[in-house]
Length: 255
Image (cartoon, rainbow, N blue to C red):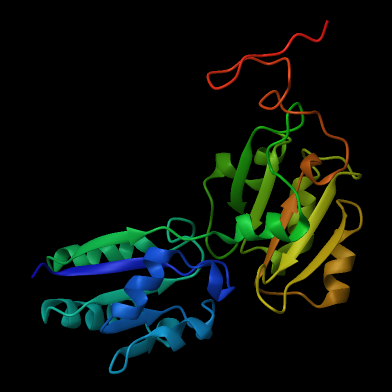
């Protein structure tokens, strides 16, 4: 039996938003190591009897990998359950590196990211014709730095749709950076715990969102969305335009 660890995206919070494959692996696992501060514990109700569960919130990297290596080397099915999609702020490379040193392979199972759940919460589409065709996923520099050329202020100058992770506790700094590219009237939405029962949406603009966030007392688990895509005016897509020809449909004459 091959030595393998499955790194599974748990989705943004709502237990129904884990993928079918992720759900199956979770139910079959002999060991689940989950991100306790981020993953909905209701998902753990699905594991089989006898499955061992570890909360990684109180574990360091070596401790996390040590238990996964032990189970994988014993031929057990191991699931590392991470919030959202593992490829976005998942701290994966260091885990995969230590597993590789122990000759343990990894298989990643994608998950629904919180930036998708946040868009659903506000009922908006990040990509609108003639308004924005680019999405930037980023974070404010803090204890974890960002490359200088990727500073939030520089990215804001593109005027694209933006989802800002892991930065709600620095809301004043975030807004100061965003002012380098967005006007005071640019709409902003802050989504707390997207898709959870506790989900909360705060809407405002560059000018007033900081005060609203502080009044709500939000300091963790919130995503900041910014850009004209949050506004009302839109241009219609060509995809369903009656006069537009594409590979699946012949355009109709309007004359």
